[in-house]
Image (cartoon, rainbow, N blue to C red; front, side, top):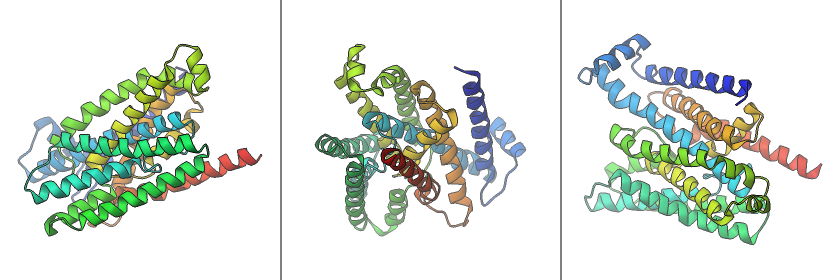
Length: 336
């Protein structure tokens, strides 16, 4: 690793740590870093401030860290798979497919009086992701134009979202608000029980992505080149799409669909690091995903407090211009 890249990673870690502290301090009840440190040292879960920090804010920050990083990494893997920087789980409708099946299971489990386990949400979201991904893959083999693929993905997203809203309307009155908030993307439902499920899944997927960094680098030069150096392209593509789908499904299961993180953050990582090497961009994307999610969550909670915005509302405001600039640059290169 070059000295410049090492310095950038250290700076990103400092920014992440600072945002974690600010997120824990920020809220309807202000708290100083010294108070946070005392509560963490004592493990205070009994006092009002202790419950706020240990049971509400800290789990939420942990969720934003892991799910934000996972979403950005999922977007990078999809971009490598389709060899196009404007691919992403939200844009291609993959997150919406996961959202649809999770919403179905949530509504019917509530009607039957059955408490859905966290692992069930991941499995169901994964199935929804795979179904949506399968449709995208079929379209990608039929048409070579990425713009048509993106339009098809957006249409899938609209269809899934429409059906999800229809299903949510059949939920019991007291559950409609929670389901509606989840369907728009939120970290408000964070708790330590869920963390026991999503943290191991994301860590394993991150390590798997790192293990595939060299094959990804070869694959970026084309399938033929990857095949000539001994990579089983079919198995590699299968592994790539599975890891990406698991990451996207995990995020959707616990936080709902979150827009533009998966497509914008890998692009930011490439620009900042001035590199295309997967060994650099994989952790870089993950860290930028963390930063973007922490910042967006803080804005969503604080901007119109006590009213809370959905995460996707904030990420769209900041992420959409990045995507637009990417498409403009891509169009100029093609025309030029």
